[in-house]
Image (tube, rainbow, N blue to C red; front, side, top):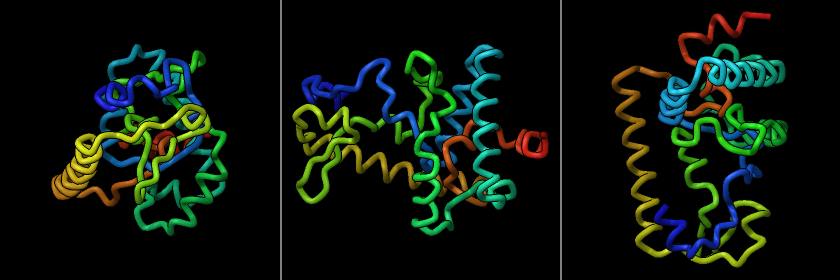
Length: 193
């Protein structure tokens, strides 16, 4: 909200704009926890529909990369292998994307989704996140907001270390559809026809 206010409502992203809700990308196990928390707030029917989409997507991905059925974590993947999957599934909609273009778990969406639409700046060059966003003049974020973004990235890294230490998880990153499938259900859903 602070970023949107500081950009003087120049962000063209709004309710129903879902250009950035298509395609797979890595999320963290912290994102998975939020997604799972969000799914628990939904009606059983809405939760079932979203989870069925996610399971179908994970099965599709596992046909191409069977190892994902046994180890969904992609921490040790080469960037080029991750890029191949991102490209291959660039048309796959997020399991939570609703028919009206809204997010079924909006308040619990991953950090990447929360920051989508906020212009990025690298070496003094400001860039939009998608074609919709770059269709309007892009305003540079204030230094304080860029510092806050850096602080959040550092905080996320610290929380991932704590979670790994507390739970013994064997990875921190996975592709988005896997975050919608609860860990306890993985074995029962993976083997199903």
